[in-house]
Length: 441
Image (cartoon, rainbow, N blue to C red; front, side, top):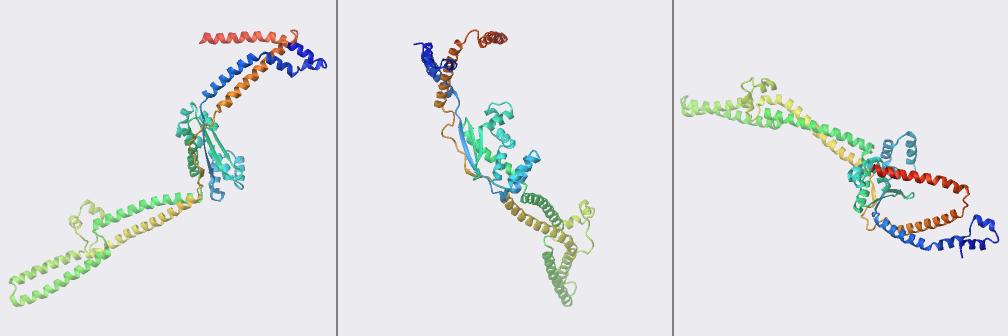
């Protein structure tokens, strides 16, 4: 039985209607008559689908989830980052309104993760232009955006970052890289009061440290030139030593008078006592020194005074010069003590400011760290092969039905006349284009 006879049997009651829309059984008979062709198409398409599915590279996914900080601790940083990344006042107002309610930090963290700063650092860090075989950075950034999926839970605010890549290790490293770059970006955009205070104290601490070092250097230079280690202790020691020398001098002088009365001036013991008295007077004079003003530093450096070298070689300054040295000594010592006290206070405040800054900085809290995928996520080879086979079978069936329908159309139909005029022209154009390409090659 032919398809025309089946149509005649089925169209006895309503011939006009079924001339426009053939019965499904007619189409089934038509496809059954071409079952060998459809079987060959199915086999070829199945083989081609398997080849295509197995030629596609494997894709691996690595996911990590983070929990944004509380809005109370990060409102200042959020506004700063918002100002830095907003393109116009409208967007700024919209995001600022979001900061007042809900999980605004979640939305902002998602925007930071999708920012060009993060993607640019990841491209440079992992050399993604070479890995993705892209010439331009903008194409690499788009490729990275397609391979990255950032979602958030509306109720809990948890952000999930999923990265897909042909290399399972690189997928894990990219997911971890998003966390690292987010932390760095948050640190760079942090402009809270504690952060500003820490920066100010840090700069002031460097200045005070330099002043302290200079004051200590000046103090050591003064002490080295004038042999002043501790004015108070040196004065006490000098007074005690001078008192002992003066007491010995008085004793020797009283003994000398006694010896002169007993032995006379030419006796050896008398001359020995006189020599000891002269030595004690010289030592006492050296210890006492002169009350004349000290030479200026410039004269000491130029060496215009002949006694400068002798003075510099003395182990201690004279007693009468100690009050005059006490003033600059006390001034230099006070400068050192002031700078030391200031340095200690600033160091303590600096540590406190760092603690407060650490409290204000919204740290990214990682819930699930990224790991290396054990199984591929794409492609599903069997499903892809079956889909391509079904698609090919459907296209072949539709082509058979359309070809049969086209053969039943009258040659005088305008559609066939149009096809008869257009198809030869298209065929000649395509043939000439192919011939030109072959000649150019």
